[in-house]
Image 1: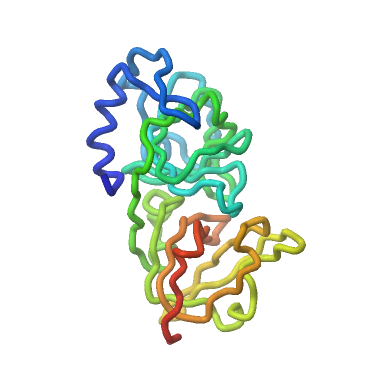
Image 2: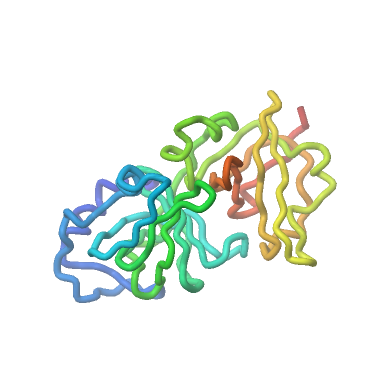
Length: 253
């Protein structure tokens, strides 16, 4: 399986079967004999049912199935996970850190968590990694969507690309940023750097001061970058997962 759409074809039968897996360390079988199909929601369902003005705390047994596209292992996010299904992406805000990793297919029990928007970014807050996240499979590969910087500012960004794994090609950091590091690891301060395309369109790259690559120098070449497309207010922000996904080593335009 190499895309979320392919995953959708096989995890629904799994959802309706007698076997579910739980815990962050091993795939096992909690005593859940059957999951009501009507209780399964998608990320698109959540966005459609609860507009930005709404904050909703789940009291029923709704479940979301999604794949982890960014974990906490590099330190660029903390007590957060980005997840994606075949309808979109969303940020999970955890009560504590987890050992879940990219490629984990999760059943996310939404009961007790709160769906809300923070600076126009949809998030599911108050998720308990131990009692609400159940690993169904591991090693699921999610391919990034190749987009342009203008796509990140299009009207359909919230429903199509927000919190989704994306790839930009033929981009570079602006010249004044190439003398800098990604963030400030000494004072552990998060900072923004700016990517541009050959038409002058720009987008921010946000890096946590605690990231294990915060002190690395911003590359001085042109190429491609894979990242999570996030948002803070009207700004679009890219969140880097791994430095090896930043391939900016070609001649600048």
